[in-house]
Length: 265
Image 1 (spheres, one colour):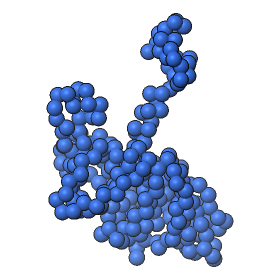
Image 2 (cartoon, helix red, strand yellow):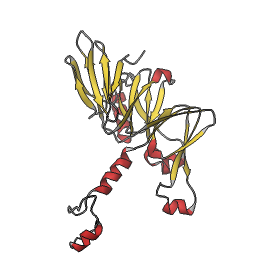
Image 3 (tube, one colour):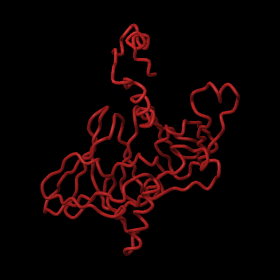
Image 4 (cartoon, helix red, strand yellow):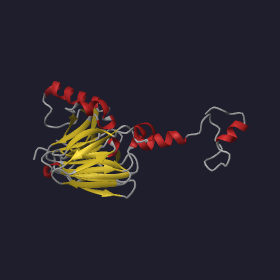
């Protein structure tokens, strides 16, 4: 194997974390900010790119890190190496309520495509790159699904799904239509495209966006019920305006603001 062979266990229900067991000289790489806790004898190091074997020389590392900018991620990742003589453990937590999905790349033909903010951590040696769309429609209208990440190698990788997770195993030619933000990831044989919803009423009053993704089998697709963008939008919409909130259960609501002279809507 090119990637380090790691053992793991996932804990929790709504707010999960994954505990990874490292043999001596084994390492795992993770997104900055996902670290939770670790045993003694684990050395933490900030690295350029993903630390995979595909990086050759300084230019290779710069190119690997540069690709991460396109997905909105940091130039750097964090590597956790067991420098002791015994097995040690390190844990990484979900960024918001949802599920952690373990992906064994050796069982998925060495590649898995995921949303740009879904990747959590992986065995060192797994390459974290960019999956560019070759179709114009995806690029212009894909929204959150425009630039996706690809995980390549033969080790374990872990991605995060918001809310409740749904796994769909698509047969040859079977099609699934999904909100672009609800896609967590899919195996490499799945064909992915963007489709216009159509209809004047749907376009003007639908409230679901103008496009959705069509996923065509064969392959496996992971769907999340709560994309982070949707969660953030609801939080922002619920924030009090003008700093003078009557409370969510107020009978008067916005009318109370008018009577108080606060008409900043």
